[in-house]
Image (tube, rainbow, N blue to C red):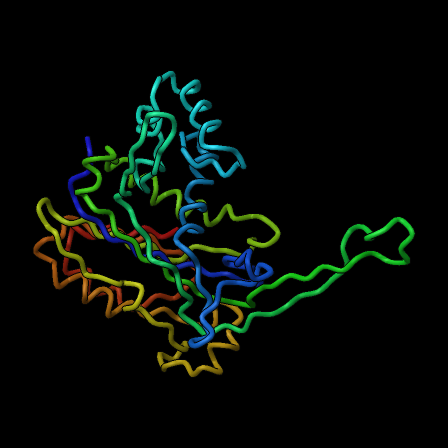
Length: 301
């Protein structure tokens, strides 16, 4: 049964000495807002983290990350799932149900708008991207005197916020369920922990707030990622220089007061607020949510 309750998500994670989201058209330089000095992470990157975790967990996904044609992938899924049409196959794929899909193959054509949409993630602190150089494993030529060189980009430290919405109306078309969303939330947290590649090791999840509204509610608190801020350990605001000098979560605290106040403006329409938080990052401002009583669920990880 398709889910009926709107949800909002706020996810905060840290990146240390790694590349949050390289731009393949710019030598894999981290996506970057030069005016603000903050790194960016595309919604596609966020969804890939989730999909990769689903694949590890044995879930059926439409976009498996392998280089192949739509025809090849469609035929694989039809055979695997024992169905005859593309729509039947995609209906059994959790990523298509949640993120949507466009399918045009032969005489079968359809397009689903994904019930779950993410904004681009953005770092809460200013970041200076660093170019790291080193030697490669092999030489460029057999007669070369030395190994070839490699270049790569990293950010010393970034605390990144991602915001998403689950739209109950679009779920009516794709068939996305509450269980699908619960699986996505777990995959986002665990998938971030499992970003263990050379360019991604150094990612750690720290906060995931999920607001589930009552039946019939059509509003949102809105842009929760823009309602949180980082502060010095004494609670003071951080200067640009202090942000650039950050090298770990032990040097900063996260203030979510404004986000919680925005959520509580709709307290009469809230079914549940679930908070997953790490034990490593100091988070302040969650106290207002305690007025929700039993509707607030907090889990330390």
